[in-house]
Amino acid sequence: MTLRAQRAIDACWTIARFSESSDNITRTYLSQPTHGVHEFLGAWMERLGMEWRVDAAGNLRGVYRGDGVGLRRLLIGSHIDTVPNAGAFDGVLGVVLALVMIEAFEGRRLSYDLEVIAFSEEEGVRFGVPFIGSRGLIGDVDEALLNTEDRAGITVKEAIEHYGVAVSELAAAVLDASALGFVEFHIEQGPVLGDVGLSLGIVEAIAGQSRYELTFRGSANHAGTTPMRRRRDALAGAAEWIGAVEREGHSTLGLVATVGRAEVVSGATNVVPGEVRVSLDVRHGWDSARALAVENLLSSAHAIAARRGLGVEVVLQFEDAATAMDGRLAAYLETAIVATGRRPHRMVSGAGHDAMVLAKRVPAAMLFLRSPGGVSHHPDEAVLLEDVEAAIAAGLYFLQHLDPNAFDTPV
Ligand code: GLV
Ligand code: MN
Ligand code: MN
Image (cartoon, rainbow, N blue to C red):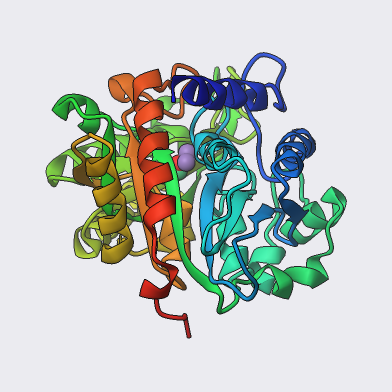
């Protein structure tokens, strides 16, 4: 198992080389380096006797046929896009582990088809909207999403066509009735498993999230000649509000509130900032707590702007409710972890995952691997060899013991 685990880690580092930047890992939705990842994973799938394709949402999908025809299908995988200046394991590890596990079968067939998915987009970096890949599988890529533009004015639809897949084929990306469920292996990205000293976790639920973009508008003017009392400084207003965001996050147990991006439009040292765009990301396991925090933060943005003579525009980019994982699939995973000699920790995921999208259509479950130091969305993101070994052992047990007939056909 050690060799297999090392192979999985090495494959993540190989994939990390496909980046938009020469000095860090950055791979946004259907950017040029994604072709390299698809070729690497596709070639690996071919060696395993799998058929693969890239669907109209840009997801790479390979099928390891089971023993028979007309079988149910289990989906397994994660995403291959990254945040800017990312680590090597967020998302990618889940895809690679699926292939390492299939490799371990040495051609033996399961009683169901296993479809490995490398989702094209989970982070929401390029278009401000996350989960474009997994939304393709539940038939939720609508015209509004297709017409969303990135910072260069390219729409999602154009990005798909430029990549070389036909957007008209979106219907063929949607899950059919053979799908029995989805399982995602992923690094925890937080400190919980490290704190309890355990390798693996079972996700019971994924926190809901709200993402906004706010634009504060004042008036740009000369930094040397405009007296302080006559300024309408958009950045000073945004900064005051960012302080309120941090205080709101501290005010409620389990709440997290983040401004992760701030941009001064036409900013310069000697110009009073006239326009500032900031992002807002709010998450909680309880939807009512998240909704209340969002309400407080939007009203404080309006109050701060009004007091300072600024305008503020608020655009909701994405919202999803807290999502429970499937109890039966989670129980299968838990049994597998115990049977292979580990103690699982049940937990809530603060990070969003493709599993929360798939859960709208099919039973979905997640297995977490400890994140050393709780570090993620950062180049120092890591995994421990022993934890990867434990995940592979549990995963193999899970795949071999799963009864495909225990799951209803989705409606
Ligand atoms: C994805 O990594 C997210 O939770 O934002
Ligand atoms: Mn991820
Ligand atoms: Mn991520």
